[in-house]
Length: 232
Image (cartoon, rainbow, N blue to C red; front, top):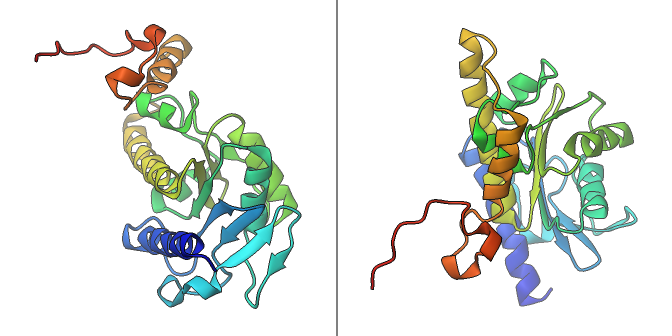
């Protein structure tokens, strides 16, 4: 095991542990993976996060074979299919966060009630149709719900996100949970009015340059935000 792989495995364990410490999951539920070489590294099945070690993480190839003495997470198929389907996916986080899971039990996704829904890359966060955990049917339903977005809910189950890094995938899971919490709160007064498709299209355009340094902004993105005057 190289030093870089050792560090990567430690980051997976840190992220998996953070799912529990931040309340995004509990017990042994949820799983974390990263793209690695010609496959992926994923948390093992049925092992408490406190008992994880770098040797217990499982390497899988993109054909679905695994190596070593530990079984991969029972949800390995969802992770594998995301890496197969989305070349930009470098990390996947699946969790049973309380508010997103509560919404999913009503087969509800998160509509454009708030502009931050665009953080997942679309004008809504869909809920995948129900299928038994760990099955091909669930993975297919997940891919259909994701579409060109980076997150979706899983009916009667939880949520899943992916991103260009572990930090981004984990952060997105937190954003999805926060949005689910806000949406459930808004539903107390009735279904909130959604933002228009035109507005969400503009929000998505702005999100493409969100967080970039001024020097990195392309000319046609320069008007995406109202910039303060620069003083030397």
